[in-house]
Image (cartoon, rainbow, N blue to C red; front, side):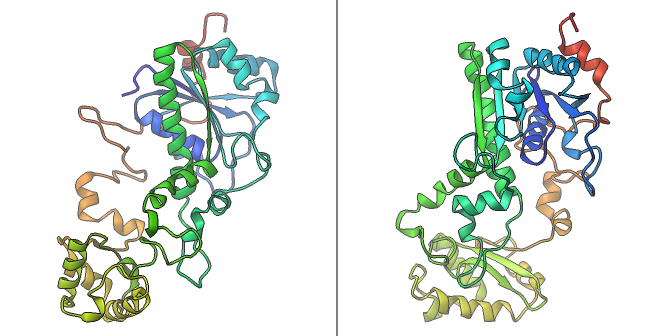
Length: 358
C-alpha cells in the first residue's frame, strides 16, 4: 500500500517504533537510525522485533560527519518519525525547521507523552501517567477499588502510535496534493483524551465524576465475572435484543429482578445475582453455554490461550511470535519483513537513499 514511500525513523521506545513498524508492514521503506554505542535495555530483545521490515543504520548524532548523513537522509525522506523529548532534535540540528526547510514536502512526525507544548512538556512519564492525566484511567476499575493498570496498548499504542500513524498518513496525502509537508504533534495525552469522545457521545449515559455509573462501566451486563475455576467471562450485551438472549441462555428470562436493563439504581443488586450465578461453574462451562450466540459473552483468555482460539486461528492472527499485520487490504498481503541486525544495512541505505555527494 505504501510502496515507494520513504520513512526515516530515529530510534526510540514504545509508540514511535510501533508506528514505524506499522508503516513498514504497509510497504513503506522504513530506515531506522540506531544510536551508535547506545546501551541495550536489560531484559529487552536485541534486535527489537518492532524493527522487523525496517533497514538499520547506526549513527552518532553528536558527530558532525554522522549528523550530516542523518540530515542528508532526511532530505530524501517522505516522512520522519522521532520520539525524543521536545527540544532534543532541535539541539541536535535535526528539528523540523531545519529539516523541513531543506525538504519542504517532509512530514515530520513527533511522538511524545505530554505533547510539544504545555507545563509538563519536559516532564517524565509513561503510559499509565498519561492515561491518569487524560481522565481515561478513571474508568479502569470497579467503584471502591483503585483503578487497574490497563495494558500498554491503551495509551502507548491506542493514544500514541495509532494517532501518529494517522497523522503521518494524512500529512503524506496533503504533501502529495500541495507540495508541502507538515509537523505532526502526536501526544499520548491527546490521543487518550480523544478516544474518550466515544464515551462522551453516550450523552446522559456518560458520567464524568463517578466510576460505575456510566453506560459501559456500571451495568450488570457490561463487566467481567469470576467463575468457579478462578477464570473470568466478559459480558457486554448492550442492545436489548442481545440482553434478552443473554437472559434466555442463563434461564433468567422470567426473573423479575433482571427484567429492567437500564436502571442504574438496580445495577448493584443485578450484578450480585449474576456474580453468584457465574461463580457456580467454570469459565469453560460458560464459554460452551454462550458459544455461537448473540449474547455478547466471551471467556477472558490469556495471550497464549488466545492464540489457539478458533477465530484467531482462522484469521491467522499469530503466525509466529509477532501478530499478523492489521488492518488488512484487499489484494495486498502485509508482512512484517526480515529483522536486520543493528547497523547492518548502512551500505544499501546510503546507496538507495543518499545523493551522490554522500
